[in-house]
Amino acid sequence: MFHQAGLQAVIDDQGMEVALFTLLEQFPFGAVMSCLAMFLIATFFITSADSATFVLGTLTTHGNLNPPNSVKFTWGLIQSVAAAVLLWSGGLKALQTGSILAAFPFAFIIVFMVVSLLKSLKKELVPSP
Image 1 (cartoon, rainbow, N blue to C red):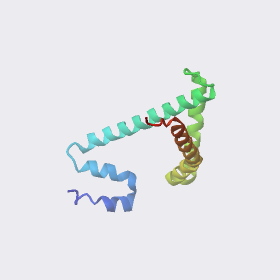
Image 2: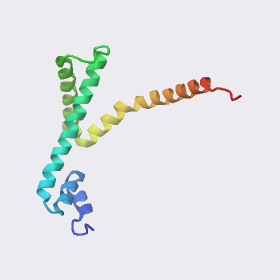
Image 3: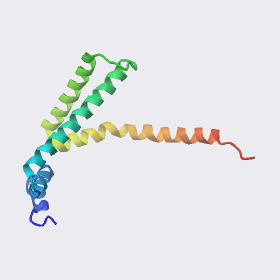
Image 4: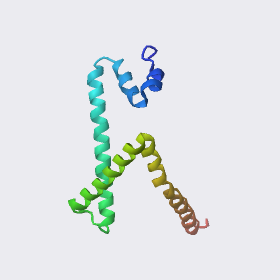
């Protein structure tokens, strides 16, 4: 279908980031679709960052469902600086590695939650008549 696009060659030469736009160039209105893709990607990142700052603000204000904007701004700044430092120091690979390292301890928490859930379900087991 996209034999003329040479997506693998583009990925090898220019990186994965360019492949989406190379693919979109093959369609009619490719420039419009590229602009739409950039808008959607930006919207995704902005809403994700806003959600993260809201959750962190709620957690640091002891469950307040309306954390002050100053708290949300502070968390947004911390997240932005952390991402910028990781991108600047080692590119996308460093950012991905940092994300994995930060999330790894939560794997153990999830395992403990599953064990706890299984114990609770076993306690609630009602004998059949």
